[in-house]
Length: 232
Image (tube, rainbow, N blue to C red; front, top):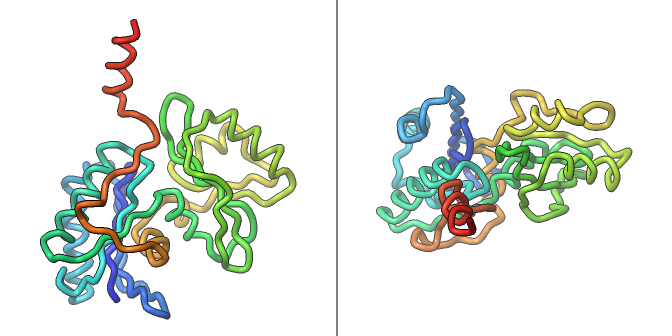
């Protein structure tokens, strides 16, 4: 079955068409990291992949998206695009954690994957995964952490283990506490992408387009400011 997977959770945007049958073949993939808004880049990227693969949306059996955490605007764009296409075609959706999708860039790695996205205010959206023998095991829920908290956890609980930082917060974390057993992923593997979404979604249940919603780990800034004003 053909799956279209997209990620628009951060500055970059990625999309992929994968056959998620027994062999899990990547049919087409695209990635853009030029800081142009996803409302301008995502749909042309999807159309170019379909055209290159000589497919149409009708050939897609299921639509997948990284539903969070990430940029509030980016998540809303990606989820809205997938909801719209799936609803129009009467096809199912699948939602995945952005952080879990990133871990699939490292299926051949042996060690701890520390997926980190820049959440501003000295925080990162983070989750940890252990990869062994091609199998990925989640070690914690998705969370928003202060960077010193993450450093303390990695250097105490996972001391001596190989740790790979990935995500758009990887460089930020590496600059604070990288080195030794804590490495930063190469540029070609560092960021979330459509293939990772498809691989993660291959194990997820179908949901309806109506049920698909962004998954935020904290309130949007405007809402935080409104609540702070009320408290004062």
